[in-house]
Amino acid sequence: MPFTTNRSALDSGVVVLALSGTMTMGTQLQQFEWAVEELAKNKQNKVVLDMSLVTYLDSSAIGVLVASTVAVRDSGGQLRLAGVTDRVSMIFRMTGIDSVLKIDTTKDEAVSTLTLGA
Amino acid sequence: MDSVLSVSSTIESRVESVDAAEDSIRRFAQDVGFGESDQYFIGLAAREILINAVKHGNHFDHTKKVGIQLSQNGDSMVLEVNDEGKGFQLDSVPDPRAPENIERRSGRGLALALAIMDEFYVEKHPTGTHIRMIKHLKQS
Image 1 (cartoon, each protein chain N blue to C red):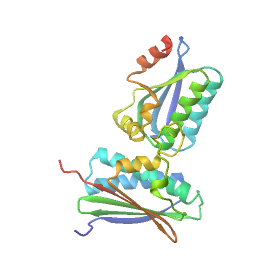
Image 2: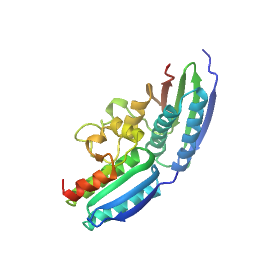
Image 3: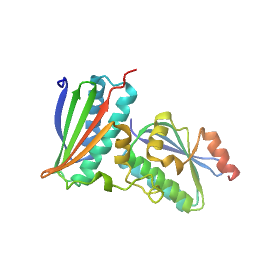
Image 4: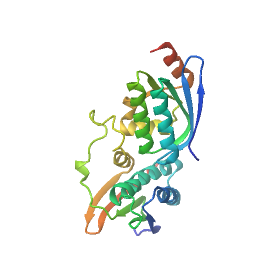
């Protein structure tokens, strides 16, 4: 399944990026990373990645998620993941990256956390 | 026990070639008898090693090939990958889980393959690097 990103901006200032498909090394992954960098640069730095439709990812995608988390953090904001499937969670645990990424069960929880400024 | 399934192929040093090879490897895992979850993770392990072979072994050089051998050995699937690179020492690869490496954007592929597969071997040959990975069918 091709990797796609759909963006929506909430009244609270939180940007939700709904990701879908397989996140693997390639052009779409690079474009996603650039999009997050642009958000961070423009101080749109309350970002939720809705991962509920991401079925598969490789280590390149993990690297982009980490880099994106750091980029938004360094801009003074926070990036949170939501709706991560069991298999993707397992992949995160295999690499230990679950200790770095901010992960919520649902998109609403992630949005609420960022809105309340936690 | 003699192998009952065996497939050999070569791919070009391109990411697109890895995508197609991964699909073939998942189908082979299915033929060996692995369930859908194991097929998923075997495919991921294979992908990570193939990407490493293309990127770090062959440096995306289109004149260099990556060799793939798949075989069934009893209740196990054996996946072997050859590249034309200079090789590496398994114990000298940085641990991506270490605190000083955890925020690095790369270096996790090998760790994933090691976590997924049951056995993992690296050999350096005059013509390149040979990796052999084995996954055992778990009896329920």
